[in-house]
Length: 463
Image (tube, rainbow, N blue to C red; front, side, top):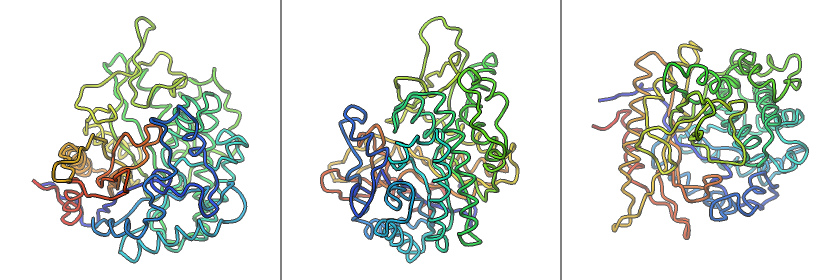
């Protein structure tokens, strides 16, 4: 039987815009995702996050749900426009008070609060001033982090600065399939840098304001890139530099990889990187957050025949893979989740062992892992999601294998606590271990929630 260390931190995760609702209540300002979802044609079925899961009004019952699962930690995100509506100035007290109630409610139930500062909901006012391609956004982010540290720093267990900056930069500013729906590759690379800089400045701000024992982290959706054959080594290196080393380099090594700078030289001269920026981005981390859903398969494209673009990130007006015109993203064999992503847990083991080799001594934590499936309601009114249970079992086994191989993995957070607004897919994709009825907002435990509760309680995978 697979057993995890006694100190292993078990949790589940959500994001503010995906669950909270109350999009224009108590002084909350508009975010880029409000603008995006209210723009016709950008989100499936015209869905918006206006109501989401109504978590803002159902906080206490949702906290009780978490307590029932028995998890040791809950990863949530703070809505920047809820606490600081325009992205600058003082705090919006009603919005800030909501997170007081959330954090205190977790602590009273014995659940460690893991707070993400930025899960994609940039205040629209900052986007209007240039967004992440503008240097000032990184400075505003650092000030926001300082305010959060002053307000909640005595109670938050772990701070995560950014969630998946790859998505913020490349899907938001290059391919346009995420907010703010821009398709400017040079702006996307400037966004990469200012996200990195903002992360480093935010860690500094948090360390100056939060409790001394608070843990600092960032969450990256690292792509485990494989080549179809050995002949595709250059394609692998290009994709790896753009997706992984663009963030790991400055954050953990204090420098961008030369491969990345050279490959993108026709797009930008990187003059937005100022002296001292890369050093500022490199701040000591207590744990690195890793989000994993599936691996990425590439091969060299010689320009003949149709080009495969099966990277799993939706087709947009442009590609998120800047300067990868000769890289083909190959559809991988099934089985697949409802998102069309192949299920291959071996990539998670290999990714964790790579991080262990490249950054020895750095603790790791799986901050998201999960799957969307159709999840029909049975005749008994319940959701018997055996496919999700199997997915979670496979991936937890992969984590255990990485631990056995020497990787220092400290915890695992299921994505997601409940069915929610899945960005441009709207409510069509269900990732939750708890079902949310879109008409009544009623929460119903799926079989996967009962299974996960047993895992959390025993620290073992059931036979």
